[in-house]
Image (tube, rainbow, N blue to C red; front, side, top):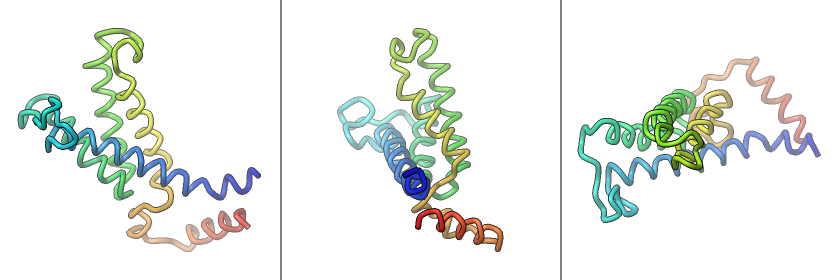
Length: 150
């Protein structure tokens, strides 16, 4: 059973990346584009250039879209993780110590989910794989991993 689960790992990671990226991009779209109810619940947007809301929303929309597509996943996830760490410690944590008390669960979860993607990469279904030049060593490692799936 472990062999089958291990062989499915890139696909589960790819699905995880796409869901996290989509949800993260939606946060940015709400604030920048006013979709899905907008920043104020009535289709409003944050003021252009407002610190830190507008910049956070821009990072969320752009990096979330890149993570969703699996394009530059590690760099986009690194920037996203840092933005969410900043959001947690500057916006939420001063209100209370625990995320459940300061409404910072989302920021903490996005921070750690994106941080995980920095180390794992895009998994399956990512555009990174289309643009990566494969060396013979990488092709052999992929073939060895595929053998586990059988």
